[in-house]
Image 1 (spheres, rainbow, N blue to C red):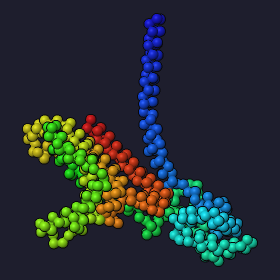
Image 2 (cartoon, one colour):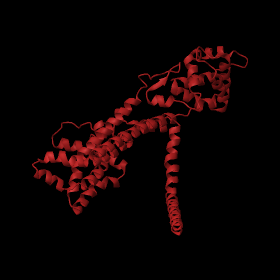
Image 3 (cartoon, rainbow, N blue to C red):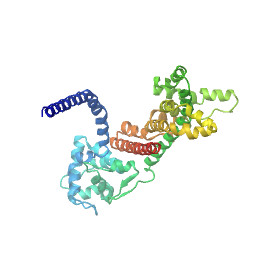
Image 4 (cartoon, rainbow, N blue to C red):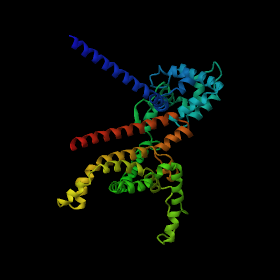
Length: 408
């Protein structure tokens, strides 16, 4: 009996001690958790939420959006909607808020901003027939598509920006259709972003694999000297490295001067503002992120395995394919994932070195966020990039798990 009580007391003290340790560990990581929540997760969530928010039109034109909520979408709305629009336009013009709603509606139908301001300057007097006056001011008010655009922007949530990021839109009847050819650019931009990122990843793998193999084969003292050159780009600003490539690749730059001096070309080559310059500079910047994971994995491969394969009669290329390459695949996968994901979000390098057809999706996100101040479109494109990256990581995790299971 006494032994049972002592064992129960000991178990209680162990649980209490374990609880205190877990509480202490939680308190230690709490500042980091709060910092990540406030400085990282919170701002990203707030930005992504802008991609589904639609508050400008109902805030500026509350009467007409409420009137259109009862509209069945067939034909034109009733006279109450026309009268409500007149009252909203008069109030918004007096308050100076008309531009907010007009800009949002212009995203949907080009020319809507001009229509709104022109109509606001020619509003009917009280008691005049609002329907006849608006249609007389501009025939667009007699078209169902104009009123459907206002109803689509009635908020408070919308799929307008997300559909636009996928080159889709809703027609007058509310059905999802393909966007016009002159507006359908974002899927091509996403494909271009993935293509450039994949090319940069392959180039980094081709250049980084032999470097990592060499570092792994050297003794630590000699490898440390070469590691300094590998890590040197980390000590230099990204903008400085990109500007250096501008100096090297321009028509009067170092590379063209060397080619002309050697007689290899008769005229300077156009290397700046090309896809070649973008891929080359990005590969140079991201190369260390490929070398480091490869080196960490290759360093753990026993060197005797290659000698054992050679002693069994395998030529060097076969020993590499059967021994070294399979054992280095975790490093290849990790390095490729790091390079590819970072390349997806590159902005400065393509903006400085690439042409109009070389800009990646991050350029368009920055364009909508800073130049046109279309936060909804910037958020939708950010969400598209985030989902694509998450899907890529999920595929990588699945393949990595299957590879480890086969190797086990």
